[in-house]
Image 1 (cartoon, rainbow, N blue to C red):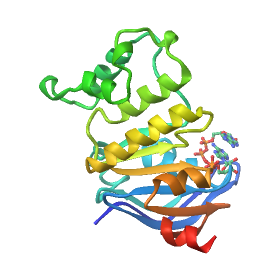
Image 2: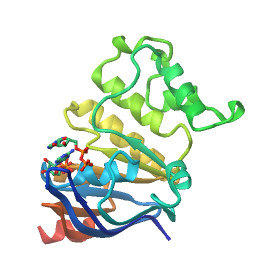
Image 3: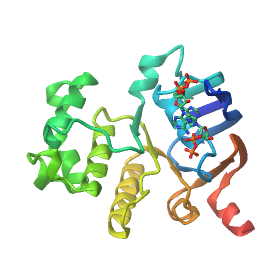
Length: 224
Ligand code: ADP
Ligand code: ADP
């Protein structure tokens, strides 16, 4: 079974912009899958449909076998999303942020692992700091930890390293690889080919809302 199955997915925004024009692909379980394409290609629209932020116009999307429309609760439990924008409540510390998220997802107290997650993203020394004292890179790492609070089998990152310096990029990549080795299927969007080449087992390219190619990274790189 696929981790994510996208079938004929289309999105036309209110103003008439066709952001997705019938896209189909599977993300195999256990892989790091790259969704590549220039700005405006439709990557965020696709991610936002998976996260429930945007309503699809037609087609279907399944996460871990659960239809995002008909089986919303199970689909949501199966995915963690790291949004492109840095958004969280500045009045809470990183530790509190993860505890609140765990509460929202109904993770029982004895199964919470906020400190472990903070250690994994190298934020344990900031566990009780206020958000205003976190750098942009720290905030991004906190969002990755937040997305993993309910231990979803699938992690999706929307442009995780946009505007991020080289050192942090390496750290984020290392953490993504570590999660993947632990069995998490990872989907990330990027407009950097090098990032996708470096990290991904498989790459799909979209442009103008259409799928251009979808193949193992090795084949794609050999073609170029
Ligand atoms: P829909 O109701 O079709 O899902 P949205 O409610 O998501 O559309 O649209 C929000 C508003 O953002 C739209 O009215 C649209 O005009 C505006 N918008 C236009 N272009 C963009 C863009 N590139 N990114 C974000 N918002 C945009
Ligand atoms: P990417 O993430 O690949 O940069 P997006 O999914 O953000 O692409 O955008 C795809 C297209 O849809 C772009 O032309 C963008 O301007 C448009 N778009 C994105 N969000 C909205 C919106 N809320 N309303 C109208 N148009 C939008």
